[in-house]
Amino acid sequence: MYPNQQPPQNQPGYGPQPPQPQQPTYPPTPGYGPQPTYAVDYLDQIAPPPPKQAFLSGSFGKIVIILGVLFVLAVSLIIALGGQKKTTTVEAMASKLENIARVAKDTHKTIKSNNLSSTNSNYQIWITNTERETTSLLDRAGVKKSSFDKEMVAEQKKLRTDLTEKFDDARLNGKLDRVYANEMAYQTELMITQLTVLAKKTPGQAFDDYAAEAIKNLTPIHDSFADFDESKD
Image (cartoon, rainbow, N blue to C red):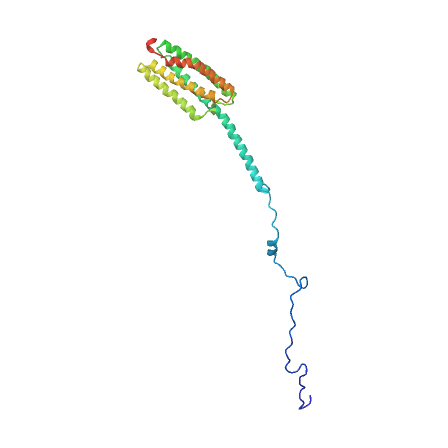
């Protein structure tokens, strides 16, 4: 440019520029241009839930089945044990016969009345026969004497001790015959009641026949003890 020469006016690129019109903006057309992205969590939320497992499937189902089998076995065992306990009355009778036989035998030699001595002899025969039948019945049922209830056995032994002491005192006081007859009338009545219960709740026909036969043979002995009268001897 020469000295004193003025720059050209209103030439493009020189001097202040007029404002340029802005280009209009349009929303993006679907399917064209960059697409929005979604977070993985959002995709998991809108995805259909996985199908539910069956109630008895998997480990839980196996546990339920095992527990069910154990429950059935436990119930079966309880029923089996309950069936074996039906012989409890017979076991108590066997233990009582064993102890009462000792008492009857030990007291027999000190009885003065002939009628009472005869009744007691019949009673000892009945005890011997019934004790043998009781033992045989329990053997066939697979019940051993060693398996008897310990508390029940102890009670029967205590009864023998108590009766022995009672009859010894009665003998010293000259009242043995009357005291013995009254006590044995009571003991034989208890036996008849016990056998009657057994006959009603018998675990088998053999037990029923055993109880019926024992009651039939013991009843006249009980009546003889109950009817004892010293004045009629």
